[in-house]
Image 1 (spheres, rainbow, N blue to C red):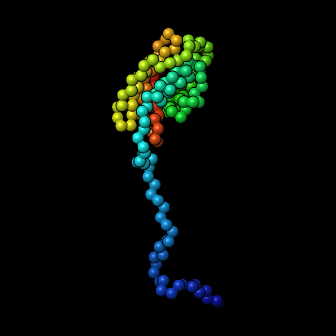
Image 2 (cartoon, rainbow, N blue to C red):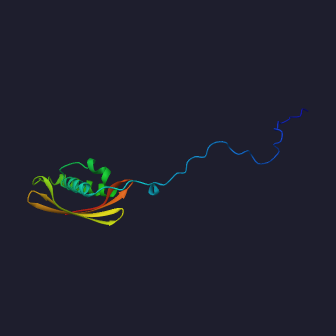
Length: 145
């Protein structure tokens, strides 16, 4: 019978393994706690999102340009309104312009805006809420009249 010998380094008879010499990975900071620059004035974005959302709801344009600035639930709602307007063959009364806007900052990370959009002679009221999300404004609530 042959005996098998295992090589053990001299002086290393402890049951604990040697510590790893690999560097420790950097700590991962959650997105919510990362330092970001302050967001700018949301008024121009509110005007653009409201005008484009009304055009989508009236069936005049597609929703692709809005996808980055609205939540998925708002996207679903606007797509449904867009589909209904296209089926009803809604006729536009003219270009959509912003007649009036009021923006109110309700917290450090949220604003609410009220707008009046004009489509020819017809006024459409719009209410919306924008919240800071990952360094940009995101529309989380939108009501079109």
